[in-house]
Length: 256
Image (cartoon, rainbow, N blue to C red; front, top):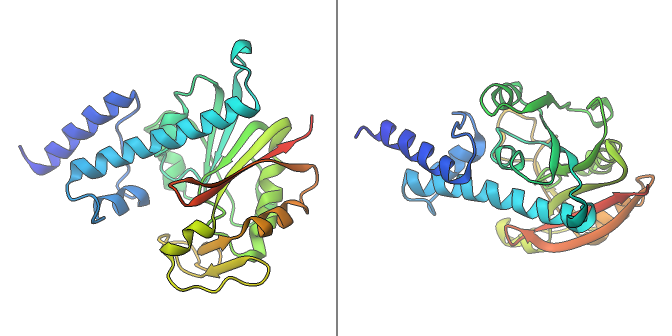
């Protein structure tokens, strides 16, 4: 079998196992990273990681939603905004969550938004480069930003917290992750500032200004301090190294 046909066949097979659309965009940064990573010696290994990791992230968010918003007996459904969704590695799995009622993806790349709409058949909207210009048009029970704040410089970190929290319904939650102290092993010998912030203007996103989207590491104290500036925000839960065994997870509630 031709290698391309083999990858296509595997993609269909693995996606079917998870009950999600099999399409992967050729410009999907995460897919290209996995395909060329030394931990994935074959296309099949990269494919299995792509789908399994997306499913695991959706499962983790579902657990958080159930802990904070959904009484299993009530069978409540929630609306979800997935911010910085990329090309839908997680989006396709979030759409299958039993607790979800409405899902909207949001990304800065027009190609990603078009792909999620056309190939994954989910609602998707454009993000903005400036936090104060973000307008998602509605509010949500859950706003989810996976590995977004792990790239924000200090100049926009709190501003993005404010922008995303503004899209949370009363009684809802903002869920986000950061590079925490456990992430230091991925960046070498770095010096974290006294206020608990480190930033390097470089990332895998070659098409975004690295001073706008680079690599950031924050201590829990820094994040808690930033949240203190977000009106109405209350830290409901903190999980150290919860995502990928090194990114910290924060659950921030808006009072009802």
